[in-house]
Length: 409
Ligand code: HEM
Image (cartoon, rainbow, N blue to C red; front, top):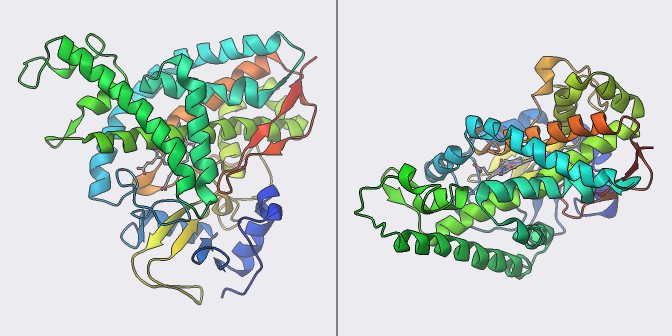
């Protein structure tokens, strides 16, 4: 049974450290309703309930978006069969072999960033490494020129920061600016195609064009993409690109800051990884479980649901709280402990990348980025330590540090 518990997803106490609140909810109020918003906001916290939400897409729809407000964006924020079509497009760009092939390039980017860090005696690990790395990587994959990436990061963060605002206009400005920019990138490629004499009836295949007439990147891929004999409209292309960009930046940054924050806060953990670098990928996985960079996302139920004695009316906004499910003692031994010796079968059970049809297509990429960052840093700075206070990032459904000052001598 659910009993009333005071929990405000937007309060300063929750923002500061949501995990004790989640524990309380999981134990005593597995279906919580917060009424002080435009409409009631429900929160589910038990592993079993959250995984059921993520896999039963007929009941728990993504059609009205993943944020607390109702908004219909379409493309990946939709349900099968519509979603399946768009998903095929993304799968092409993020196929595991493409991502694995990027490892050398990502390692080179990490090294360059750490070289710059090393010129000083102390550094903010967020600004120096965790923030620029994912932006540089995604810009490279998408085909955004490096000189524009700071602007990009600003638009992407501004959209996420507006996620709790009841006013949809707050995220419109940065979204429109990003869309104008992306449309220019699409048109640039169209002009190149036209100048080369390529037209629809031309016998040239995509292989002849990509990397020759236009760059071989995701923007070009989305321009030319066709699934089941249908092309995308420009509106769809922009939504897809936007979803990829916003989805991948701040999340991967948070994975990296959270990882170092925990390892360095309990320094014996960092020392263990220095001693045995093979533990780097275990540390990344445990960080994902312990500190979910996306604490939770919303679904909308297509019919009334009765759960743990609570009735959730049809079309309610309900959060699948990955961060809470990841510390459910029914599934994880000593859930509140960051363990480098967590049993293998538990390590990848976390829900930080979601589950089922919407499982994060960027999961492998962000895991590689975090592991390479950790491997380089332990090698270069075995005595790394935190020297100042850290600060939480703002968006209420994300979890990461925006400041992590470190020293190494
Ligand atoms: C640590 C880093 C990341 C975390 C924690 C994360 C988390 C998530 C989660 C929880 C979902 C599932 C959403 C749902 O169930 O509705 C998701 C989906 C998605 N992620 Fe990630 N993500 C990360 C990195 C990335 C990267 C690097 C990219 C792009 C390059 C990306 C792009 C996307 C997209 C496009 C979706 C929507 C997929 C769909 O609905 O079919 N993410 N991500």
